[in-house]
Length: 238
Image 1 (cartoon, rainbow, N blue to C red):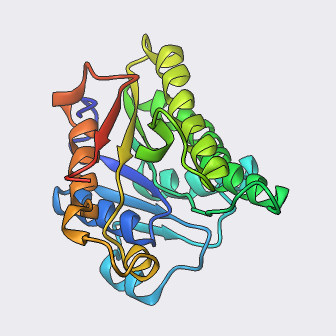
Image 2 (cartoon, rainbow, N blue to C red):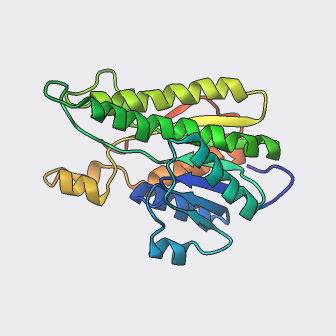
């Protein structure tokens, strides 16, 4: 994507210090983008070294809080001159049956997965519109798009399905303002956490985080300028 004002794009990534967020950051950085890396956890020392200036790292951000999200976006925009792309990776996972479960799990999943995407998108939008064009790329989940949710997956899949509906509605809202909004729906990701949780699984069938990052880069590119409101399944061989 180009905006005619600045050949170097600024890409904001939420949940940037996790496994998937890091893969997305490296892919965009390798393509020459400036990065605004935002997460709820403190900035790791490794990230400060790997993503030094002109990149911007902002840790300890409650992305579900509109004021905190807006402050973080302003920090990035002030340091880089604006924002061209937002990639909402921030999220979480919990498996819990409803019987004997905790309502707090539902609150946690909707906060971590949906409210973060809503608040971050709202906070980034004035900066994207100021550039005259932009991209919002939300990371949902393949499980959230399934015809039927599996047992114990209610809170997670409901919150991730909400991310997809958010993208569709926002795409319609922004379709005449040169901002596209799309969702990536990954299958099971090959991450250390998933390997630990499922030690007997055939990990060769899982999706590498770098493959999801490649799709994000495509959706941010000029080649995807006519793609909006889409949900792209990245399932590998799962």
